[in-house]
Image (cartoon, rainbow, N blue to C red; front, side, top):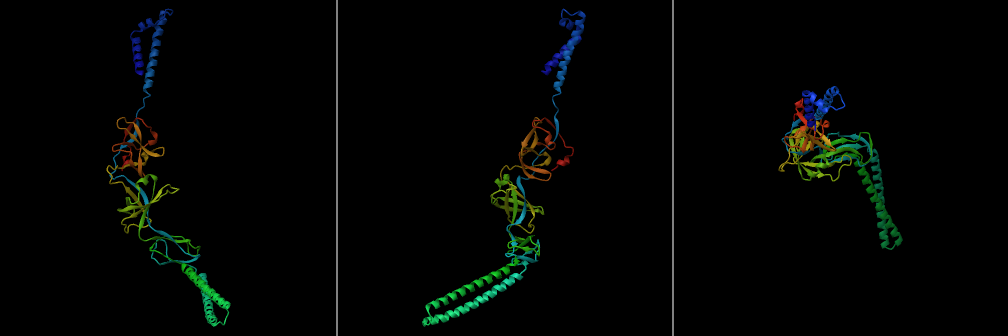
Length: 404
């Protein structure tokens, strides 16, 4: 339409310039004077042509120029995609240590980080009251034993007299009842003395396994209740690597599956591990599942509390994809799902491509799926472009910012 108007405008304007009189005659009306007709007609036609030409040029300005964007051609990393999760080295068994009786802590013999042996004394309570209780229990036991001896002697005499029919049967029954009562009192006093003895023994806290003290939960001079934690002990022996897995990773985490564990404290080593336990329910706060792995061959470099990176490797599957490393500035979101802007090869227009993130680092992300070798991905200004927009790819001002 614009081309037709422009052609018509140029044609009419050219004829007016070449033959002004002809147009004056053809467009003149009978009631106008010859002079008026010859002057007004070319002006009117020229004005119409100018309007047509102006409209043509206005339509041409609506076509926008390509938007410059910083985009780079991607190539995958050399390593296969792996579900990598952060974790921590923990003892398989970790128990709180506490007194079995209440009292005042008067001595602590170990500190956090100390290695202890089974049976080693760790802390003690004030034993004065417990020793008095034990003395009282033993005195009562001694009195009960004396009464039992007397009751036994009386029973033997009455039994002999009963056989000689010297006493009535009722008296014999009373003697037997007194002996049974004395025997029961002796047994009760003996049990009470043993109980008080145990309470005195419980006032000394000892390690029930070899291990390492990982926390101190009470101070010297503090009054504690029975069962209140004094220390936490990580047992020596088997260690676990513990991590919290998101829901998207659960399908690849089954009991017995293999993983590789690396420790930032020992970067030159890696350890084979197997999934030992997957929590059946999610944590209500973080909505993640606790996963525990056992190291196949731990060594002295593995220490409790160390951080670890756990790679649940997907190697061994044919056609395993390779990850792409992108700066965080390239990441966009479509709703709650991550995505990136990809420049189409043939049309230089933008496409919003959903991706799967394998790992988030401080300044970069590792894309596990959604991209292909040779894709051109927008690295900056991802919130200032639109789907289908025509763009012009330009090189970054500082290429070192996007170096792998």
